[in-house]
Image 1: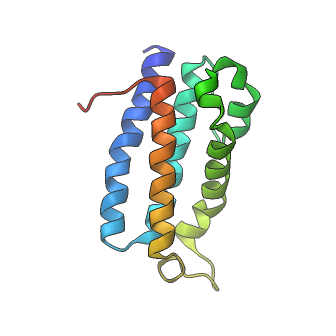
Image 2: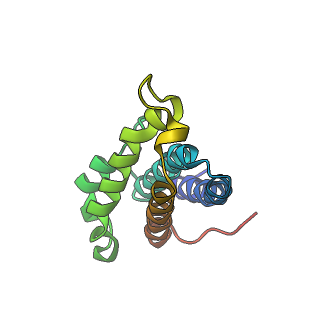
Length: 140
């Protein structure tokens, strides 16, 4: 498998997972919308890095590399990189909290419909930018 094929695979997986976000949202499971959204954004950014020939590290937040290597991408997409970084960093901070919570933070009680709506909009935006870099992928 080539690097470009792996990038497309990441985007394919991200788009499939987006469908699960809609279901989680319908079920009013907003904390899991947040948690799963982080993985979708991670797949998209890592796919974008792979498309540019950059091996992403095995960490959850890679927006710093995207910003560092922005010269490898068309200006049409680099103008969105700061927003991609903001989304990725925000979701990374929420990742464990949304999943495990804390004694004073019950995820199913803390996250709201508005949180879920905003997160889904952010993920849809990230996927659109990733499609511009990686290319659209077909459903299989």
